[in-house]
Image (cartoon, rainbow, N blue to C red; front, side, top):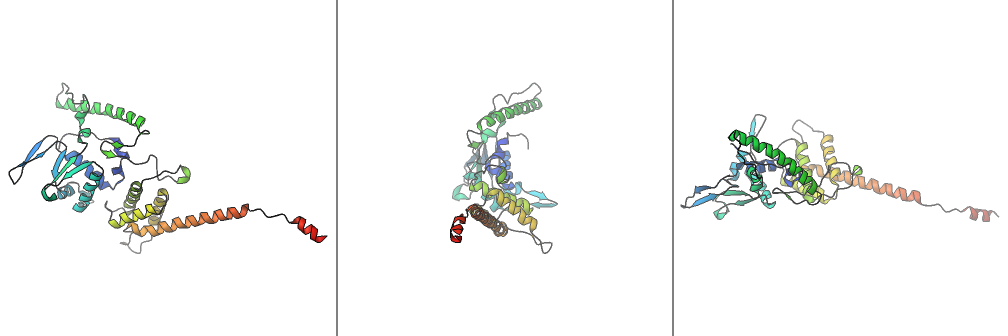
Length: 302
């Protein structure tokens, strides 16, 4: 497959970057795969389905096969249901639209909603052909892309503090800074529930060290932690601690669900709250003044 598209560093600050790696792999595949020119496909009823630039006619199973990977010597593919969930997530975040045809199951036509922004020729002057022919055009495009990246970085740096809106088709709601830094070393940052849950799930996947998918039970556990009021940095710290302190009984014994870790994290959180409450009570008791009764004792002695 030839050709290339523009990609943006700002995607590192997007919601999809916080999702499990399979989400971003699917998103990148769709950006690479969509049509760059109009095409017509004959249908069984004698009509034609027009595939426009920025669209890709495919199926959930085809996407699952296309984004498979090798783990060691074993080929792995995501479950088609997982791909369907990812596509719905991309739709919800206004990154793609999906037309499934008659009866909502005839075909899967995916449209990248901001496809034009990823095309090299959308930059003025970027399609200039040099005397060296196609090879020279490619080098000229790369040089201009480098200049454009520098320009975009400067513009983004100037505007990022003024607005956190959409970034090239990818909504950005991620707070800046390292939200895993201990709270005592920084000011407390307010996280959206989605950022909180994605961060917990991503850390769990990293600690689990097997596969990229999470179950409904894992999603529910992440929601429970978020709603419990535990600060994100503390929840991540105790999640890591749960894996570090876990003692397997045999070779196949391991932590298989995030929900297993939730009671441990809640216990740690409530133990810390109780410790703080005891400390506050002790401070109040220490500040209480003892009345001076020496005059009363003197009168009694007389």
